Amino acid sequence: MTADVFSPEKRSAVMRRVKGRDTSPELAVRKVLRAAGIGYRLGGCGLPGRPDVTMKGRRVALFVHGCFWHGHDCPRGARRPKTNADYWIAKIARNRARDAAAVQALTASGWRVVTVWECEMRRPGFAQALVAEIEI
Image 1 (cartoon, rainbow, N blue to C red):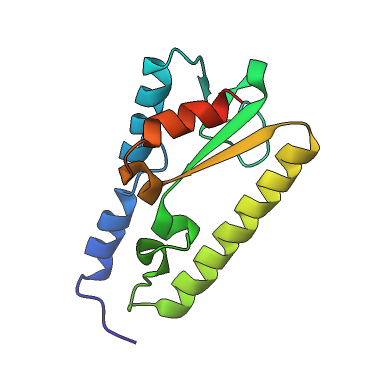
Image 2 (tube, helix red, strand yellow):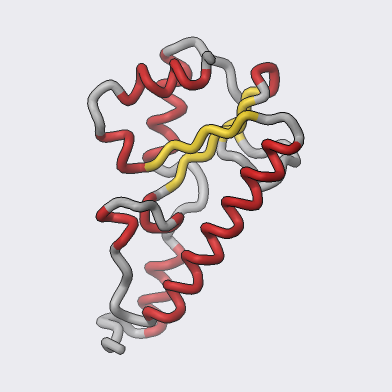
């Protein structure tokens, strides 16, 4: 195990600044939806997994996932911290299991689930593809 470069107090301060909502990817997705004239609500309105964005009339629950935090199968998602590696491996595995359970519960209750990965947003045509997927 590699020693942390920060003191415990500094590490705590750094981790406190990690946002859980209104992240850059979430704001970018919401901008795409607004530009396309697609109405939405924030938060999960009591739904399993608390989707980032919901479109109740369309029965669409949208999750915006950071590749690292949700263990995406991409270079950024495959990266693991060297410090406290066992913790992070278990943490990301729990996140993936929680995400899968939320998708299953939403699907079972008649919602269509759309997951946007942080890395997908960099691809050309992302906005058009997202709008097309929602408007199916």
